[in-house]
Image: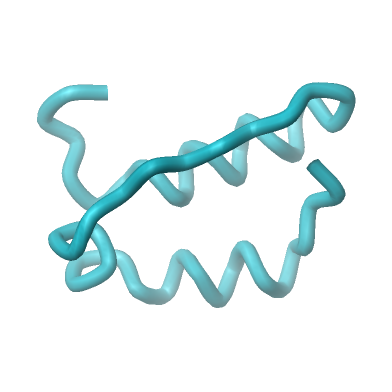
Length: 50
Protein backbone atom coordinates (compact mmCIF):
# COMPACT_ATOMS: atom_id res chain seq x y z
CA UNK A 1 0.00 0.00 0.00
CA UNK A 2 2.23 2.81 -1.18
CA UNK A 3 0.92 6.34 -0.84
CA UNK A 4 -1.83 5.58 1.64
CA UNK A 5 -0.48 7.22 4.78
CA UNK A 6 -2.99 7.02 7.57
CA UNK A 7 -4.88 3.93 6.46
CA UNK A 8 -2.68 0.89 7.21
CA UNK A 9 -4.13 0.20 10.67
CA UNK A 10 -7.72 0.49 9.45
CA UNK A 11 -6.98 -1.70 6.43
CA UNK A 12 -5.29 -4.29 8.63
CA UNK A 13 -8.31 -4.34 10.93
CA UNK A 14 -10.60 -4.90 7.97
CA UNK A 15 -8.43 -7.75 6.75
CA UNK A 16 -8.33 -9.31 10.22
CA UNK A 17 -12.10 -9.14 10.64
CA UNK A 18 -12.82 -10.48 7.15
CA UNK A 19 -10.41 -13.44 7.43
CA UNK A 20 -10.28 -14.51 11.09
CA UNK A 21 -8.46 -17.75 10.22
CA UNK A 22 -5.42 -15.83 8.92
CA UNK A 23 -2.78 -13.97 10.89
CA UNK A 24 -2.53 -10.26 10.05
CA UNK A 25 0.41 -7.98 10.86
CA UNK A 26 0.55 -4.23 10.23
CA UNK A 27 3.76 -2.24 10.04
CA UNK A 28 3.22 1.48 10.39
CA UNK A 29 5.14 4.58 11.29
CA UNK A 30 4.89 7.85 13.11
CA UNK A 31 3.03 9.59 10.27
CA UNK A 32 0.13 7.16 10.46
CA UNK A 33 -0.05 7.42 14.22
CA UNK A 34 -0.20 11.18 13.88
CA UNK A 35 -2.89 11.08 11.19
CA UNK A 36 -4.93 8.10 12.37
CA UNK A 37 -4.49 7.68 16.11
CA UNK A 38 -8.20 6.97 16.50
CA UNK A 39 -7.76 3.77 14.49
CA UNK A 40 -5.86 2.21 17.39
CA UNK A 41 -8.88 2.77 19.62
CA UNK A 42 -11.08 1.02 17.06
CA UNK A 43 -8.68 -1.94 16.91
CA UNK A 44 -8.71 -2.19 20.71
CA UNK A 45 -12.52 -2.05 20.76
CA UNK A 46 -12.91 -4.70 18.04
CA UNK A 47 -10.09 -6.85 19.50
CA UNK A 48 -9.70 -9.29 16.60
CA UNK A 49 -8.38 -12.69 17.71
CA UNK A 50 -5.87 -12.81 14.88
